[in-house]
Image 1 (cartoon, rainbow, N blue to C red):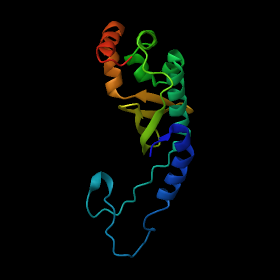
Image 2: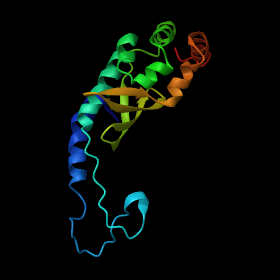
Image 3: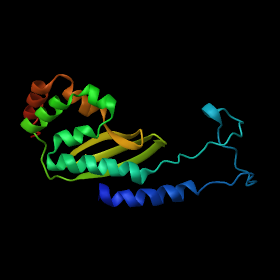
Image 4: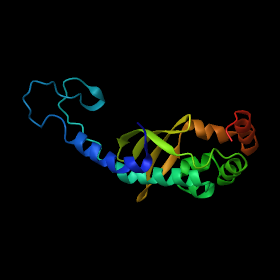
Length: 173
């Protein structure tokens, strides 16, 4: 079963809390070998700190991004992107492509995988209709920003006209 982004926001925090609480306690004498240390060097007893990211907070940005895209508010969706993604795809190109050849509006985004990587990065896999995509959420200043996956960024790399032609040829709008 796939859930909409909003339903997963609250659940993600609970799951991470439960996962973070699992594992052997320091000084555990259960006979389990110590976890690999820095760079996986055997024999190291260094403790790897758990990822302590606020996934629920990060997912609010994904939820907002997907909501804006579903409504067709291209400029506002682009403004939630990371600076790197914005440099890769200018706002005018993103808006032009999506205005001329929008994906099916009102089609819900469904998260399939949410993977916290670090305190600054959460990776996403999501589905919209038959199309599965990847992206990430990155901290920027006091908040989170959305970073589209490389596949989406490549779609815009050759400019608006080529992206529109490509979408039309693939019957994606």
